[in-house]
Amino acid sequence: MMFGEKKEKSPEPQKRAALDTVIGPGAEIVGDITVKAGARIDGRVKGNVSCQGELIIGKDGSVEGEVRSASAVLAGRITGRLLVEGKAELSSTARMEGDVTCAKLVIEEGAFFQGHCQMSAPTTP
Image 1 (cartoon, one colour):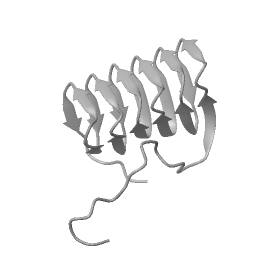
Image 2 (cartoon, helix red, strand yellow):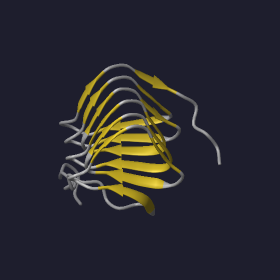
Image 3 (tube, one colour):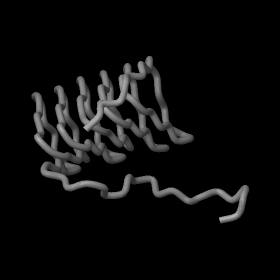
Image 4 (cartoon, helix red, strand yellow):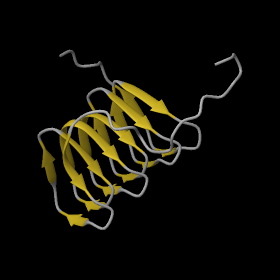
């Protein structure tokens, strides 16, 4: 790639880690969710989400509530707080309405973020 060329990015996050839980596009869950590994949300969740691994929220996925995870990739929508131990990524289709606490924050051009960000010290394995 030459200097000045734009690198093409896919709008959806790439599969990175093993996912134990997938909430499909037609699903709507009301209540809190706790996952001991990675998870992907392509449906709607009204409640708090706690994920010990990587949490991916697809472009059509949404969460209304507090979200906690080791790392997070947001292509959809969160209305509430996002607390991430490591890196939080907001892709170009992301809509984050609420406060974010994380060690690292990546926001792609086109993402919407309304709220406050507090950087925390990264956790060591």
